[in-house]
Length: 118
Length: 117
Image (cartoon, rainbow over all chains, first blue to last red; front, side):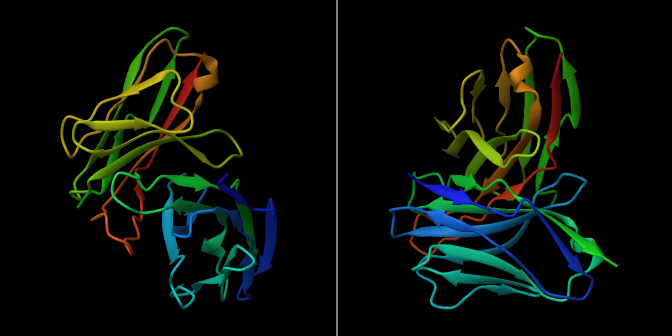
């Protein structure tokens, strides 16, 4: 059964340092996508980064990078040079398949609350 | 582009009342979704739609109904509200051509905070 696990309920990081948020997944589908979303205290869900199961390189988007280790079924989010505005809840999510009529449905982990200290 | 908009932002219902949560997207996305987020939890899929006239159940569909008469709108109907439906409801949309390599990235609305007393 498809599953997303985030084992860190809360994390602290010093401003300007890098931080890694863990995510492991389980699926039997060879085609899948992995997403990270940020949810600040205001509540909206903000898309950060995407990694496809067939992508050869790790995804990067500005200060965000995804450490994709397919054999270990992990998709950790790395935030470099943390800023105070990075304090938020972060969710890892997985989409199985991707063909038409599969709906692109996402399964979410329980989230990691990141606090950036000045 | 306004993206995905949801109304209302907040609502308090009494047990047994009904209401419709509105969702509209202006990105011409073919897929739309409804999720709920309970306190301290991730999001769970309620219903989704792959196009106008086509809807299907997600993980937690009981107590809800949806319709999709246009590409832009995807309302969620709560019948006979119960305290267990107290949650934050998110609408999302994505675009896919149905080919491998599509990211199907979902873009979310701001959410509706619903309390059932």
